[in-house]
Length: 183
Ligand code: 5GP
Ligand code: MG
Image 1 (cartoon, rainbow, N blue to C red):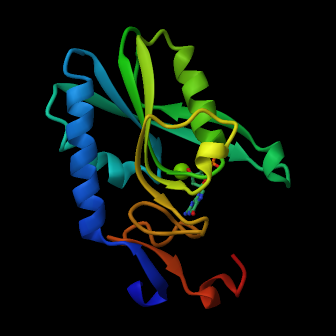
Image 2: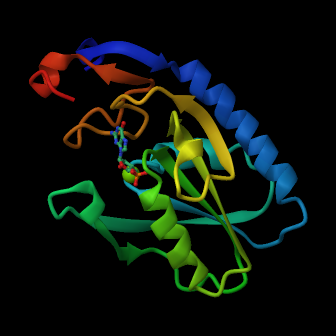
Image 3: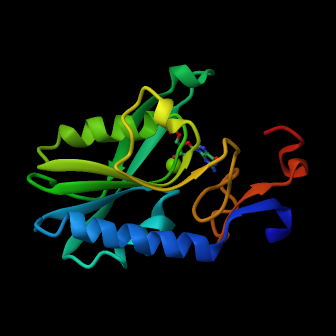
């Protein structure tokens, strides 16, 4: 599995250190909230969720949402929809959405717009990695960003290629041969 990687971009140690810092920051920022709800977008951000919540030192709840993206051929035609949730009501909750990766920002924008319709008290977003240049994107920026990485397709720590490689402990780039030579 690791032999399929051309390059390790973030080691397990890099990720755990940063996750700990983010957890500490989030704990400070939400210190006065009694209603923190951390929402994870399935399936990629499950591993990040598991690490980050263990560094949040406040009482909190968490839950999951499945968002399906129907690709109409071109990226611009993607229409995300919420297909499943694991929570009854988020009325009055301070929701922190955690995502594995931010590329264009469309997924996070869709998810935050949807969360805002659920009667929540507040919504913020946290991504482990953001592709460089995201600051120039027209989409709202995440409130917490673990790492900014070059604009390459990455796998590991929850991120997949054809549903595989999610269980790698690091984040890296696959050898071109695995993709058949194209990214
Ligand atoms: P966005 O909506 O921000 O363009 O894309 C976010 C989604 O695209 C992520 O949740 C993830 O599923 C997928 N994605 C974007 N970039 C990568 C990448 O480099 N590697 C993997 N495995 N998935 C990615
Ligand atoms: Mg995802």
